[in-house]
Length: 518
Image (spheres, rainbow, N blue to C red):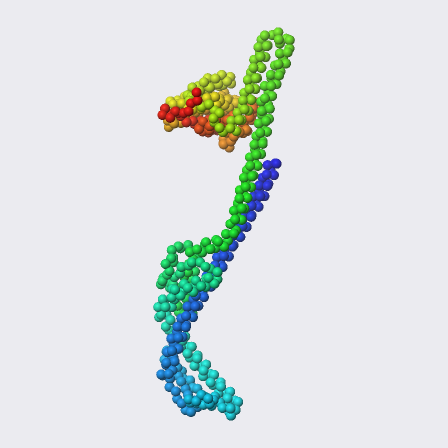
């Protein structure tokens, strides 16, 4: 699959998942807002009902109290003037105003005679009876209105003087509000307080105000009077209640995120697999070239050996045999490089032979062997083995290959206009670590390639020169072996100025010698 198609699918699927997550989050937010609005509306409705209930209770109190007072006042203070067919009464208001009422009736102890009760007799004409009946109804209405006005005036005058514990009893408020909330489907614990309109607390339940993040609701008590009281209610578990009502959406968000992670991981695998495929293709091409060259040389030399003229020339035979030997050695080296692949697939270090060796001596031997190759290109190699303690526990053969591979790379990727100059140093760090530095003045490595040079099959683009072929395994092999030796390796480089490879390995102390295989 082409990389452009993979990128297109990635963009389309990312946009799809992004839109899906966005709409789910918007739906969740709207659901939470709707639940909060419903919750607030229900609570405020229940609080308004509680306030109305308290008003009715207070009105009942004044009705029961004031009706008795008014009745007593009527009996004791209101004069009745009987004149045979009429009587009158008066009501004194709290402000001192006196209202007189006259009732057309004949006062008698008899209850059976309609004429004596003040109702027109059957002999009266219809108009007179109608007028008398209107007068009776009007008088009764005025009497009841007077009573009601007296009660209202008493409420307006005396309600504010009652103690708050009588007007808004805490037990009464809790019981009624609990009942109202339960009737509306809210069986939640709550805390409440009665305050003034300026938020001065008159009394409160035990847990009121413990958490400022709780949702609080307020309702004026006795709003139809000159009241300064306010009921405040808060719900400690409001957030949990709202969350529980929308929690069914959470699994859908989780599944969407899981699908998104799986999709992204699949895309990463696809790109990684494509990269590995490209690397393997390059590896096969490089391997074919590397193996065909010595094979062709050996084949040509063997054909020349069949020539009679060559067979008669000892010098030619010696030359051809040397060519065959060199190319065979080169072929064997390339095959060994390929066989190093088995190291990457086998993380078991038991196959290695760990011995206690002096790193300075091994480095010195490699430098002496490699000096001929460097001088062939007119260059030089120097060493500064300053480590006082260089005893390490490694596989000697693989450790030698590590040093040799790094020096070989330095020569391979030298600058064409400059003789190669290599330098290798050793020093001990903090008495328990050995540092080996191998530096060169070659073509260098780009910064973006430094993190990838230790990957299998990876070859730096600037290093893909026509005269340098490889499999991209050398540095990967070095990294793998250094890791097995409990060490670390890093590279520092500047394009056009050279590179430095720094290896750090644990030292063997005299008190804690490493495992040595004899």
